Length: 255
Image (cartoon, rainbow, N blue to C red; front, side):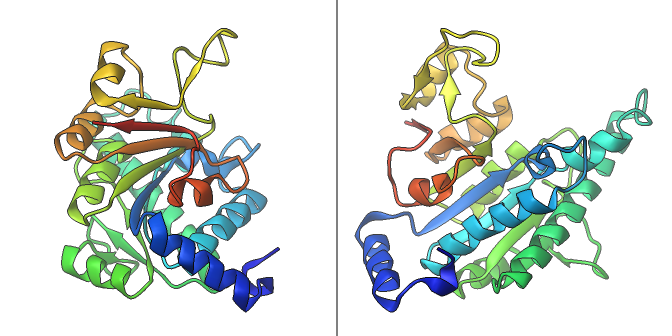
């Protein structure tokens, strides 16, 4: 059932659920690779359409949503040419790739009837507006989806770090890390069939077990700010909605 097909009673019921215990403001971290679907690189139309439907459903429920998106799906296509390149230059190329993905996501949301704004940490004012925190907060309060592009605007920092930073800046209640696996495992589930998934785990436990939840800088920032992280599979239908409603989905990393 699509959003437009929902009855008024169903929408009211979901609004009631939101009032009772869902997160009010979340930061969603999407990997660029997730946009590829089964393609080698680029943006798979069916994949982004499905993701947009999930995001639109969350927005329609009144949950304030900001997104940080990676650029691996685009940069992967030029990674060979970047071999031996200066690290800072390669990082700036990756930031520009995130701007392209952000514009694609914004346009896909527009076609789904969702108003979104892209703010970039790099100044490209002919294309997107610069990151201005008060304006981003106002957009969120107005019910618009805010997409943060170009990472932190600095080389040597990942989009995971950008997600943690922006999440803290906008007062998000949680960082949602959307991946291709359904949570944090004791080992790589693709290589170790005995690997077990954690339902909940503390930051200290994750550090002790050397679990790769996010990169070290992002992880430390979330821990220091008391900002929980939920790792879940974006490929699992309805998972984003369940996480936003506070249901048991993926792995919750908390203090």
